[in-house]
Structure formats: structure tokens, C-alpha cells
Image (cartoon, rainbow, N blue to C red; front, side, top):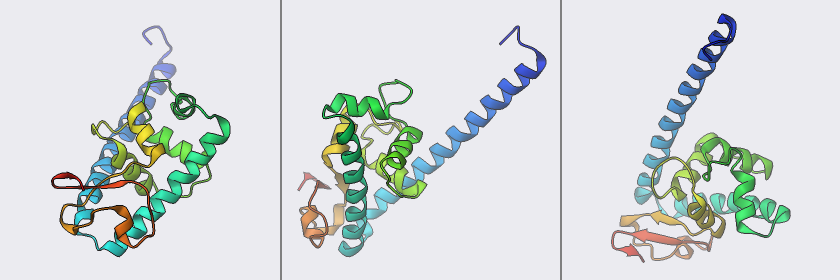
Length: 168
């Protein structure tokens, strides 16, 4: 603020710098999560089944928590969109998971966000969030030959697998 005292301006500048550092860290984490998703095509069926089952459990707990508060999808989205930006950023997503009692690492939360973030903007818009709640995975595993998530050992039934030629 132009008319603020020097101490207020200094505090404001420090807050802006901290926010820039956080944004850069989120970008780094997002790139790492995208790399993990790409590496899934090299994973064994057993490891994929474990990962998908774990993610499915986390999404189920989030869905149950949101459903207890509201039965309307739009209201569920609004409960997660804390800054009313019409999208859910990483912090909001992580906060929602924590509120639902989901225990996961920062990397797991970012990987789930990246999995459902179809446009790569590090945020979930309404449609992407609905896909997450419906657990409609676009699991990118070209070379596994998997035709459905259920083929991964039965550990998890939700979603579809994305192959090189589209949904298999």
C-alpha cells in the first residue's frame, strides 16, 4: 500500500515473497506429480492396483465427508473452493482431504490433484472436481495392456484406464 508505514510495506513485501516461494514449490511438486503419473505406464499391475486402491480410499473418504454436509454437487465444490475462485487449488484440496480425515503425504495429494487436473493449470475446476468425486480416472498406462482398472487385481473397481488409443 502506497500510504502505509515502512513497517507495513516491509511486512507486505515479505508476505508477497513468501507467496512466490509457495507458488514455485507447488509448481515443482506438480511437475513431480505429473512425472509420477507418466511413470505409471512402467509400473507393475500389482503396484498400480495398490496405488489406485489407496487413492480410491482417500477419494471415498472425501466424498463421504462432503456428502454429509450437502447432497448437491455444487455445494460440495463450494465447500472446497475456499477463496471463491471457481477452482480448487492445491492448498484447498489438501485442506479438504485433511478435513475429511484423509491421511496422505503432500506428494499423494498433489498426484491426485494432477491426475484429475485435465488442463494442467494446477487447479480443479468444477467439471474436474466432479470427475474426482465420481472417481472417473483417466489413468494413463499405455503399455500395461490393462483394459480396465478391475483387471489390476480387483483391488479397486472405479474409473477407466486411458490407453494410447483412448479409453480401453
